[in-house]
Every structure is written in structure tokens, then in C-alpha cells.
Amino acid sequence: SRLSERLSKTRSTFTYQLDTLFLGKREIDNELLDDLEEILITADLGVATTQELLEHARRKVKRKELTDPAALKDTLKEKIKAFILDAVANDELRMPDKGPFVIMVIGVNGVGKTTTIGKIAHKFQQSGQSVMLVAADTFRAAAVSQLQIWGERNNVPVVAHQEGADPSSVVFDALGTAVSQNIDVVLVDTAGRLHTQANLMEELKKIKRVMGKKLAGSPHEILLVIDATTGQNGISQARLFDDAVTITGMALTKLDGTSKGGIVANICREIKVPIRFIGIGEQMDDLRDFNADEFTEALFQ
Ligand code: GDP
Image 1 (cartoon, rainbow, N blue to C red):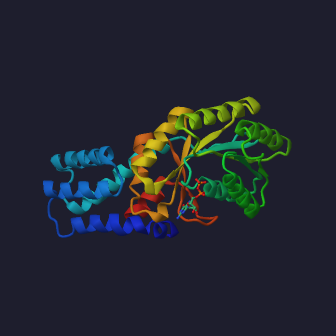
Image 2: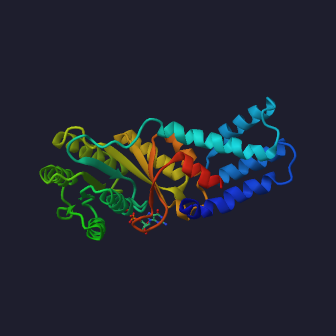
């Protein structure tokens, strides 16, 4: 599939290393498990997630439920899938019955926030929804013009004020316009960096508060964008943002550019918030709805 092609960087190392490790081995001994530990850590599964995977395997070996090294690969696959499913369980992206579906998009600069917004806009448009983009990162002129470029590409309106304007007032105006124009989906871009981290978090809290006041129930989704190539850093970012505004979903970008696709399972296990989308390239249609089964299969193919 195209997904597994795009994950080829991960597969070419992770799957190759696993297959090489198991090749010709007759039993699962400590040496094999030590080598396995290294491979898992290298794939960005993280120390805690790796330990849990190994414990799970060791228990199965001890109980003689697992003897064949080749079967160990399936055991890993199932456990990794379980971590992901656990985070995704019963929590689908749900649009409100009435009024615009408001998605507040957050994340540090450079992770692919604007690109992801452009791709999501495209996706909703393809399914026949009207979309509006909102430039609530008023601190960087470049951020506003980047968003405007995606707006033009998709032919969707972009609400922006002048540089330095209060982001909350941009959002306030935009939601009013979205309601009066019967817009289906509103995607709000936010700052990824301010003078201090505390300032940024306060700003995001304020934007969220103002949204709720202007349109009850909104934002319906607080989507954190994480760069998959940043490993443990991405997990730290998720914790920080979650503490501040309680994220409801994640988009994981640049999975095409990393050999460390294990980060997906690691993030799910650590953060327990569903991954909604994955970015697998720079183009408009390089976004996929995240599906645990499809992803795990592609990872182990
Ligand atoms: P922002 O600062 O978070 O808004 O980041 P941008 O949207 O400007 O993206 C930063 C860079 O990452 C750009 O060069 C994008 O083309 C690139 N990018 C975003 N998503 C992906 C992805 O899924 N795969 C790849 N390979 N590049 C991406």
C-alpha cells in the first residue's frame, strides 16, 4: 500500500533489524531479548514502552506460550497495536449536530502545523464541507502569510487581523463570521512560540476560553501537532500542552521522514490521547486518517 511505502524508512530499519535478529534463531534467550531491546529503543519506542513489551514477551516465554523467535514478532505487533488501540478507544472525531465544527490546532513552530491545517482543510473540502481558516498566530507575519497561501491553494477564506493583534479577538470575530456564513469546519492556527513558554500556554488557554464564550461547546477538538522525527521531545511537548489546555487529539507529522515509527506506539502509551491524522509527505493529500490496524500492519510488513 502507499502507506507502507511512505513508512519505508521505518520499515527498512525496524522490520529489517527484527527479521535479521530472528533469522536462524531457535530459541528466545536473554541475548536475543537484549538485542531486541536495543532495536525497540532505536525505533523510538522509548524506555518504558520497551520494558513493557519485553516484560510481556518474557512472561509468555516463561509460561511456554512463546518459544519460536519468529512468533515473537507477532507478539510485539499485537502488543504495539494494543497500546495504540487503548489510546484511540471509543473516541472518534465527532462533529457537532449543528453549527461549525471548530478545531483549535496547537504545537510548537516547525512541527508542520500550518501544512497539516492545509491538508485537513483539503480533506474536509473533498468530503463536501465548507472550511474557514483562522490566523490566530498574530505574532509572526510569516505564519499569517503561510496560512493565506494554504487558503488560496484550497480556495477557502482565511480570517486574519494585522500583525500583533490579540489572537482571541481574531478567533472571536472568526467564529461570528463562521456561524453567520454557515461554515462547516473552522481550523484555527495558533502561535507555536512566544517570549516564554508560560506566555504561550496562557495565550492558548485564553483563546480556548474565548471560543467557548463565543460558541458554546467549542473548540470541539484541540489538536496537537507533533513532529514524529523529534522522538521523546514530542512526548514532552504533548505533556506540556495537555497540562495547559487538555488536548483531545494528535496529528503526527513527517512519518515519511523518520526510521522511528515506533514513536506512534510510544506516544499512545504515554499520552493516551487518540492520534487523528498522520502526515506522510509535504503535499496536500499526504495526510491519512489514523487507523491502528492499518498502521501496525504497515509498520511490520
Ligand atoms: P509550522 O511552523 O508548525 O506551521 O510548520 P510548517 O507547516 O511550516 O511545516 C514545516 C516544514 O515541515 C515544512 O517544510 C513542511 O513542508 C514540512 N512538513 C510538514 N508536514 C510534513 C510531513 O508529513 N512530511 C514531510 N516530509 N514534511 C512535512
